[in-house]
Length: 164
Image 1: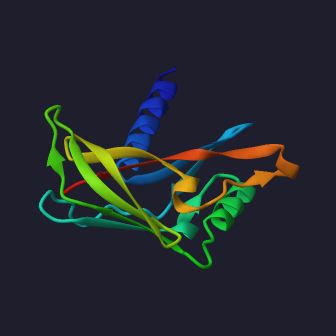
Image 2: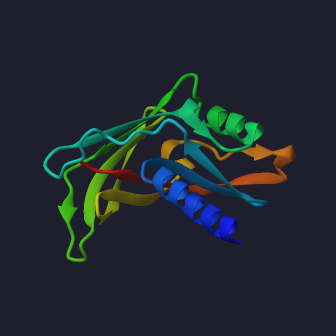
């Protein structure tokens, strides 16, 4: 029993540490949800309120756990022609509730859309989440098996990283 408790706390510390710097895309089909994680995401060197803050994600760095989903994800985002996703956060403005708001330009497949993203601060960890749609970028959500499996238009972008 003692070993199980130690193993449990070790796993919590590893999970907690690995979640400090991550970028995840969550999506759903009519059958199941999927989660694609940028396995090489690194936090911006500086993320400050006075300047714009850029994050560049390589589409081929996303891993969706299953090879066929990862392959479909990269194909849908046309990773060979448009290998990167650019996110440019504008100046952070502090809200009354202690969170920050930023106008973020998301560029995907040479199309840019601006979202107002709320960013939370917990110690030195900044985190945020934003729902976007494939259709915002002119992308038709993929279908498989003759239309029996349909990907929902909405997907959630979420991030967290340790700020300096």
